[in-house]
Image 1 (cartoon, helix red, strand yellow):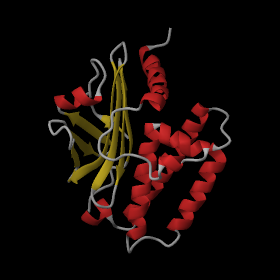
Image 2: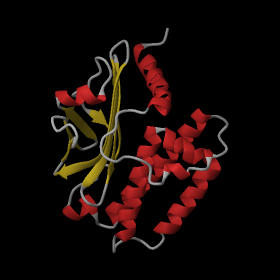
Image 3: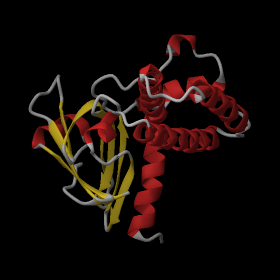
Image 4: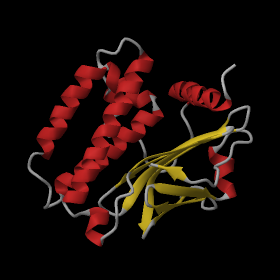
Length: 236
């Protein structure tokens, strides 16, 4: 029999596959950066079908456009993105299954998002312009009967796209929430659901850790039966 954490990790992977078809609850505009009605390739269709990939593509597109518009952007940025797109299509397009393509695209997007985040810091725009440290990255937490991740993509306008996924309890209750406009206030990100104003999420950062907190109303809209956003410290 698998140990509890291994079972939770496996269940999280299975849930990710399930979301390919059902789609998790989403907030704000976290759709891909391109028109899914015009998706032609297998990669584009998968990005449109997978909410996780769509979130990353939309965040990358918004960050790229903001960097290009900045007077401090390096002139090779467009060439770098074009090269990355070619490599993404070449490498992930060879995947022999949908799951392998999904994993390949996830790695590719997270690598490029980290690169663009570093460019933003070097260009002294966004949080760096205010003397604030970058909090972009992927944070994780695993304990008995709980596994969770928090993905943060900062934007130059001091907002951030945030994704929170949790699986808790011996029968694997889930919560899944995407935000497109969390607001940076010092070492904290704050997001309030514009459609459900009683749902508010705060993320408190300290060094390489984050402690996300969600009001009870968030559980109603973004969790399954008995799912819960845990008040725990996640590490990058």
